[in-house]
Structures are given as structure tokens and as C-alpha cells.
Length: 489
Image 1: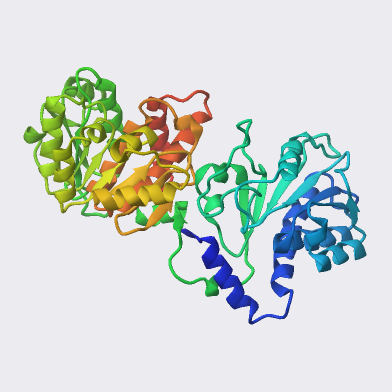
Image 2: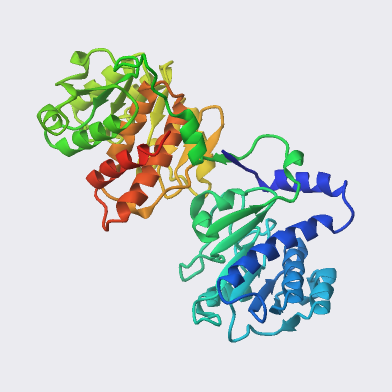
């Protein structure tokens, strides 16, 4: 997993490292990494020599990083122009270096630009862009390079204007993001939350982390961790010569109804794709489930299902008294549970919520934003990580807050973010597949937070895989999930 650090922790680490280095060393390391990535991008557009490069330069160290990187590109023959947004507070040594290398200061962007470096505001920025900077940011989409294609925008450390510690993005009066939309972000020393969560993550584009020697100086706990393929592969339950269906785990699925049989079919499909050896279904859609998945043992009620190692409950269950009774029975079982959809709506009932909080066995809840609001009485807000952790602590459960960058939070304050999300999953039934997979992972013995993080990661990949064939349906995601899991060792 890749750690993500808050601004205060990064600042403290930078101060400690700077005390051990000659003046300017850290900035030169950052500029070297930034210039290298820009040179690679220019190589894809006709080469560095004579390439038109525009620097958008704010005040402080972020502007200094940008100017020094521009100087390195100018020494390689690029035609580098710098637009100074705060001329009276520009990094003087960086500007001198740029001019000595042949770069020039301009009052307006040149007509042709291959690469734009966004050095307007760094990690100390607050409250979006000022009017002039916002107008510049909005104009970046109109710049074209030598090849006629849109200029490539490279953010320096973070896209200017985003809320670095939360990933929130302020809006202009016209409703546009008041921040730079980058194609590439070159981050220095550590990932910041805005590069991993919230609307800001979508503005960062492809993120490259440049090692400037900061890692040994970072103290305390990261704000969150970004899950990677290698993590999921390490966590995945393996098979051995003595494995059999019961030792692999049995997952119970209490989903669907006569009204919503598809939810049962999809959640069972997600569970069957996972690592467990047997699925027991309990609900009003047993005929449809067995017709679609003949290996499943199906009964009408949870109390008749038999022994399982985990339960999935909620998708299409209904919110009537029958659904509430089934949920109570699931919550009374001393095994891990996944609660989704209708089960979350039923939890608004105080008695069920109290039963939930009294449980000793692990719980994972999987709300989208509207379900979160019903549970909490308020929207997640700008800080999705903090909101997830508050709900996790209140419910004594692992919370999987769905979204483009799904956040997983634990009751003891740990957070994970999934980088594989895709808008293709914003369609009915895909969450049912996710819940089934998650239950299968719990039944196979994964800790709740790992099961949630792994399920979100794999579900996102399945959504991307399914989207290659055009518009996505939930059955497409269930099929793609099997293809994704086949790549695990």
C-alpha cells in the first residue's frame, strides 16, 4: 500500500530534512524530477529542443520548483516562457536561473504551447484560485502544441486550487471546478490526500511520485493508504492440496425477494466469483438463484440456511417486517456480516442500530452517499475520509463509502482508498455484485478492512474491464469480475 500524508506531516518532514542539507538541495531534487517528467512528455510530442513550454508561476517554493525545472528544460533547448502571477513575490533565485538558461518572462501565454507547468499554488494553498489564476486555469484547455493537440498540463506537487488535506474542490460561481485540471501531477516526497481522494483526485491525472529523500523523516500515521494490486494478491486466500469446500469458507447470502430477484442473482454471482467454497442462499428469490447458479444451496429464510462463516444481507431484501426479521437473524449470528442497500435503510430503526453496535463479530457496511446521509443525518461533505471514519466509529463497523474513489474506514481510525473506481459502475446492481464478493472474502477469513479494500479494488477493475465492451450492466461486471480474479496468483 502507498501511504498518503497530510500537509502538516509533510511540512514537518521537509523541515527536518532541510536541516541536514545544503541550502537549495531539496528544491533542486524536486526540480530535477519535474524536469525529467516534462522532458519525457515533450519527447512524445516532437522532442525537447525548441519545444514551447509555459510556466505558470506563483509565489513561494512551488513557484521556485517550477522555475528551476524550467531552467533545466531551457538548458536542453526548450523555448521556456514564464508567466508570473505574483511578480513581487516570485522566487528570485529560481527566476535568475531561468533567465540565465535562456528562459523569458512573458505577460501573456504564447500562441503555441506543448507543455504547461502549473506552479500557481502548492500545498499551502487555501480556498481555490484567485480570479486571474482561475481564468488562466480555465484557458489551459484552449492551448495547442506544435502537433495541433491540446497542451499537456503538468501540476507541480498538487493541482493548484484543490483542498490538499481533503481532496475537496471549490467551485466558481458558474459551477466549474475552481482548480487546475492536470494531465499529470508530479508529487514530491509523499502523496497528499488530494491526489488520492475526493473530486481533486480526478483533476490530478496520472500521478508520479518523485523521491526527494523525505520518507525517513515522515512521522506519525499516514492520513490513509492507497491499495495496490500487490496488496490484493498478498491477501488473497490460497488453495492447497488439502483444501475442500468447507475449509475454504461458506458464505450466506440473504438478499433479493420476489419483487427484486435480480439483486439475489447478482449478489450470489459476486459471492461465487470469490474465494469461498460454498454459497448458501436464503430468501424469496431461491428459484431464480438456483436456476442461474445451480451450485448454490437455497432456502427461504436465514434461520433455515445452516452454518456459514459470513453473511451478506440487504440487496433487494425489502424494508418490510419480513426484511427486518431476516436482518435481525443475520445480526444475531456470531459471524462477520456485510450490510448493503435495504439493510442500511432498516438500520435507521433505532433497535436494529443498537443490535448492530452490540455485536462482537466484524461488520462491514457499504453505503453510497444517499445511504450515508440517511444513516448519519448529514451528507459526507468535503472530507470523505473524515466522514467515513466518523461513521465507522459510531457504528463500530468497517465502512465502505462508495464513490469514484471509494473510501474504507475502520473504527480505530485507519483509512484506505481505492484507485480503480470508474463511472461505469454507476449503474443499478453493480453494488450487489460488490457485496457478494465482499462476503465471500470475509467467509474465507480475511480481516474486515482487508476484505473491503480488496473487494473495492477488484470490483473497480471489473467495472473497467466491462466498460471496454461499451455500456455496462451489472451482469457484465459479474462476468468481468471472474476474468479479473483469474489474474490473481
